[in-house]
View: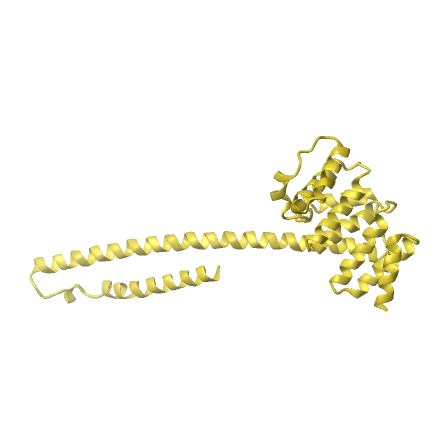
Length: 266
């Protein structure tokens, strides 16, 4: 984008440099045009007029081209700003999820559902590659068990992880009351974590804890939120999450792992 902008500035500078002498010449008195006969001077004036008209046409065309390029750049800037706003909104949603865990709060499924509706812009950035991968995901059958098993089959195929993400995203939207909801959210957290998308992973893991606190996946999901915080260098939040795992889910595998992490952070 910077290269194109410099090119436009250079073009405009050259045009101004070309146009200036002509503008000066146009203001000169007619007496300066030759010293021949009247017909010769008229011919010379016609040539000058024609050249002037051609130059003006070229200038107008160049300005029109430059305006089109500027409009295109403006469109690119607006698109970039929109995408940036989406990322910022998504970060806010992730931060709210994590803060609710570190503070010990637990939203009910109804509250979380309302939050998802209010943050549709953030949710749209959950998995940027999902739209492209949807075409490769299995067609939904209309049966929750069948579709869940189909998504699990994709998880087992290392070459179709994007398809697995798309399949689970479709699942949680199509079957909001399914008993597989906590597992589907957990798998979305794990798949995004494997791809290095830690903010998205934290969002899904936190969703398991907040929406389904009694699920067998809840303790492990909460523990992995702490791992993500530790990966990101936020030791204070990691400790807070680990402590929540130990206190809320004593005796679980997640609590045991969290206790080990706390010991290493002392």
